[in-house]
Length: 305
Image (cartoon, rainbow, N blue to C red):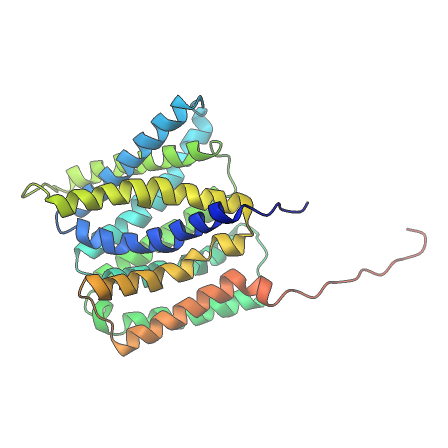
């Protein structure tokens, strides 16, 4: 069945949300952790976003999901948001530059392809080439510069990326609540889990967050969570997957430029090279099947069949 072409304005708005809003969240997280403890910031972000989205859906007349889809969404929320995004937030609190964090997170499609094989999803040679190229970029990125001096921060982001990739693949094969209700349950669960982790780990506010900290929390909750996630869902329903997932190689560039332009960050020549290699790898994995389509196979016709 042919996919109906989406209207141009909503399409551009959704792409802008994924490219620039999600790309900017790494820099905003860096601003936020200067005022908030990291897990508290991430927990409040997703709890507020989940409450806003859930109230909106209930007022619109949607019903709460059954326990099984809700449980599945809760587990996906823990893997993607609580562990995946929470790890990035903690790592940036440990002085990992926002641009470098975004480059590491760009490896998610590479790991997702590996996990796809565990679930029997077919892969092609061009995608495995992307995996090999991406591994070169990861080794180069971690061999010196900012992550070379912060191995725990690098490991934290790597584990978060693995969790996000596995949750994405597994979540695409299970029964989840319909539409935006899945996102609401995922964000609520992640927010609660992160706030519990914040309390158990002894996080507390040393001073009242200033205006920058409050604006960062508001931006991450409304724009980085509610708006960007719904934009992603719109793209998944209306455009080919290659376009919908193209944020994976645009976000690092946006994050790096914002970090350098406004955050006083800098990248070494080795890190610039690693950025280019990882972006190339993600392009190969994401767009490989479109850039190098498989040759059609012709099955011979046997008389009498």
